[in-house]
Length: 102
Image 1 (cartoon, rainbow, N blue to C red):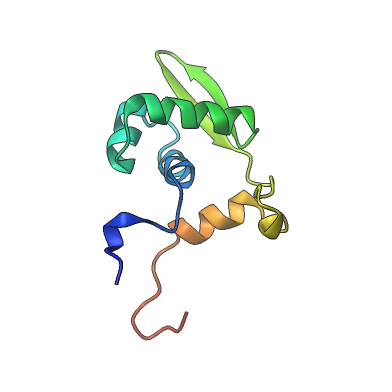
Image 2: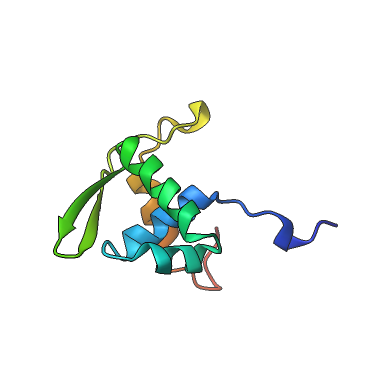
């Protein structure tokens, strides 16, 4: 049986996006620490997400604030009928209680 630490269901891009959705003013250093990647990797991922249009960056003083374009579709052909906002909402919603089926 594979060790659960060897892989995860979500990519680093998804984890970075989740951090930003939870805290639109999060610092790259904090995002990198939460995701378990370098600050440079977090910076590249943020640039990818901004370039693809999923995030909009706005400067507020010395910090950036990010806004999710929730209406955009996921990138993989199998998932193009799902908006990124739907996925984020599912991942940040309160967990199902023990009595609720999946």
